[in-house]
Image 1: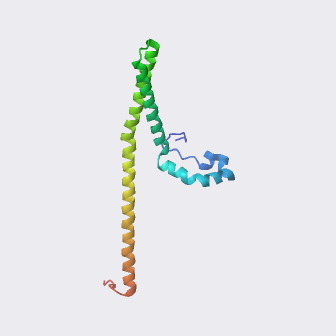
Image 2: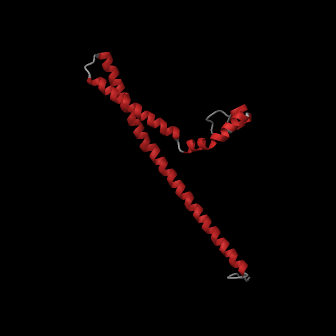
Length: 151
């Protein structure tokens, strides 16, 4: 394709072009070196998603509650319409957060947990395989259980 954003076979933009002079500024590099571990944790733990869900949930509950209180008062038409809109917006916001939590966050966390378990099992199997190879090499060095293949 032509390298347009979103094109399937577009080559990635080199970091030097994307971040320009920042990569050569010693102050920026020092800041990045200091904050890189926390940035990596933030990305892997999806902090921005969690914070936006918490903020959306709280704002939804506040709007829902405020709209409910305004609806219960004997209000006339323009204010009653605003109360109904606020009530509905709040309800939609906090229930939307709940849906996202149960259909996005929980399955993703479970998937990550399974990935970590698979990696741990693979590492253990690899280590066991290495230990078996090391043991076979030790036996070969000692002359125990080692024979030349007969053809």
